[in-house]
Structure formats: C-alpha cells, structure tokens
Length: 75
Image (cartoon, rainbow, N blue to C red; front, side, top):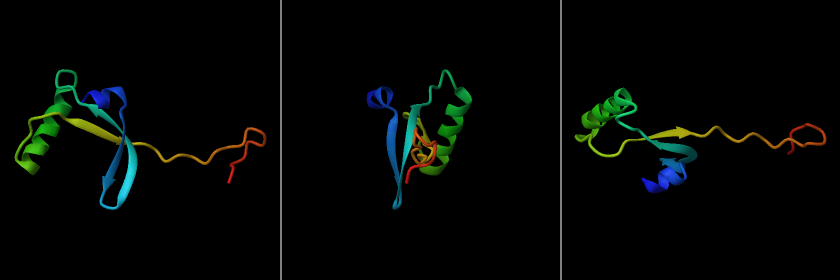
C-alpha cells in the first residue's frame, strides 16, 4: 500500500492488452457506500471480501505532441 500512496501510477494487463492507470485505496470511513459495494461484489464473485480495496482508473491515451511553432500536430 505504501507504494500506491507514494506513486499511484500503475500498469494493468487484461489478457494481451496492457494500459496505464491510476490506483487509489478506497477508505471505508470516507466512502462507506463504495467500500461496502466493492466488498459485496468481491464476496459474491470470489467468496471473500475482506482486505484492501483499490480502485483502478484507466489513464486517457496520450495525444500526439503539438509543435509550439506551428500549433500543429507533430508526426
């Protein structure tokens, strides 16, 4: 958890696809409804729901760089 708090940037792989994301720990005291919903889903799917709950948010794809001289996309 300390690594996530220090740098929330993560790489996620689903099958052959890999993408950048941000990770954040869901605080049960600050967001009780979200925490409870995630626990319930985990219990139904995996048979357990205790433990650290982390939310992953995909990063948007990077835009093509723009030239400061022409204000046009660089390719």
